[in-house]
Amino acid sequence: MLESTNTSLLIIETRRCTDIVVGVPHHAPAGVEQLPCPEHKDSDENAGFLGRYLAERLDACSVIACNYPVDVNKCLRTDYCMQIASWNPKVLVEIHGHGGVNANSDIEISSGAANNVYSEILASQLHGKLSAIKGLDSYSICGTHSKLGLAAKDAVTVNDGRWLPYHI
Image (cartoon, rainbow, N blue to C red; front, top):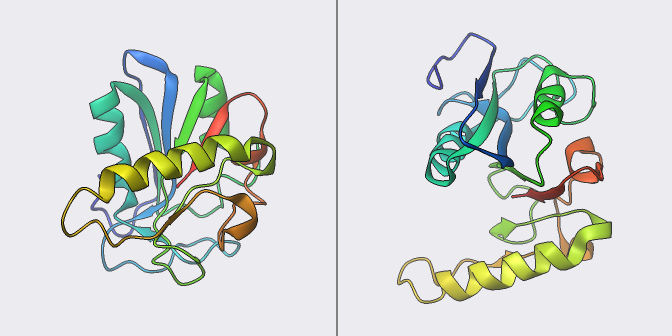
């Protein structure tokens, strides 16, 4: 289903752990650069594969919007946001893939301005892990909200106080 190029789908998978939810709001398969969404044209190519893999590894719930005609993480009334809320998670990990066009770092992590300490901790831990791996050691990673090019300021999923968000 994640390889479908012309069908809009919401893929919902409930797993054992409901405290963590992995969301992918702008998935499209490789080669599909644009979503059929006027508010958010750029797709996050293949981000759904990474999100689903992470959710499986964590045995966590996941929701992936594929080729969606609306920007699902900008309004709490979308089926994407309502599904996340129905699981009542403690942590939401939202996977994106902006291709670095507007990013200031290779990997940017936002937990919103109010939860900046959490994104800074995750960025620091990730940097420590990647710096020990040849080939991944040169990636720049930032979790400081004020330094992010893509801080997810308009994403309701990041600014909702019901869960701790990680917009990656």
